[in-house]
Length: 475
Ligand code: C2O
Ligand code: CU
Image (cartoon, rainbow, N blue to C red; front, side):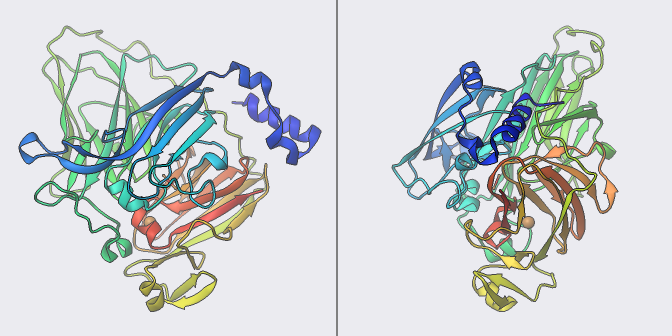
């Protein structure tokens, strides 16, 4: 599907040259936009994560809520978010998956200076895409997120699907002490060098798993978001047959979960639509199959005793309208390779840090255990791992030479996931995060149409602390 914005920009680019583009006013677009304003405050608070007799847990959160408030707007809107930092340390807000200008992306050093305690910052940008996105800090990220800072950003389609209602399930995990406080062992070496910070408690929308009531015959859209620091879910629906309609916010041809599973890594979102066709009193469930001995029930579903809304679905589940992403030209893409090395049980001998090669023991002393193309990073201001010319189609072969899975995330763009381990991925979906299995390869491709220095990093946040981040420059 063609985007009038992109087409228009290309056209203008052809007429006046690329450099002038960013300063050209777009009065026609601006006048049709409605601006939605939000107030967002990062602050300390307390949340009832566990049942009442446990007492509350001290958290860091947005607007006093865990997860943070759902920000909701419509595709094509402009949003203005008045952000205030009431924490004791600097932070920023990153709008995960949103294709917005680099200076609104919330990356310290690149987009903006960190927002200091007591300071404010106004984020303002247009929303080109519909779908399920989210927001989180990008400073001291592993600690700030483990303490509860995250929230979902829903952008409604111009032409929304026909459903009876929708439900959002934000999946998170927490590492708690026996007194319900958050264990403050952030950045523990063991977590950095292995699979990241895994919790000992799983919540859905900030609470222990609960019962979900439906009425027979309903068609419901379920938005699933994994906001964990490191945990991967292997989701399975029992008793209903949902169709996956969007991945990382972007529409995909409706299809059954592959082998009945939806694997969702940190940072990823999946939207499904399901017809609830059981009888009053029937049950269904959403489980996490990561734990082999016993699947963990995230949601227990029950059909209410109300008379069925309808006895059979009103037609098939239709595809959502495509987002206006520049389509790939794969006839002759620019090819790149990024190799991931390091971690426990890995073969990495050493890597470059701050321009100096260091053997592995020295790297470890500096808290780095991961590298991308031989470079371990500790800051976001770094030379790019690759440079892409604006408008070019780029195909990156990412090679995971480690024994851990890595959800690799690119800022500012959506890419198509073409293949994993040389096998075509069904529908080659658009995504902002690709979950790479241990010792695997993935091919992803995107049109570099958003100028800036964009982070490409693992979304296991302890791996980021351990050096696994890089910058892709779009000129
Ligand atoms: Cu959701 Cu750079 O991250
Ligand atoms: Cu990783």
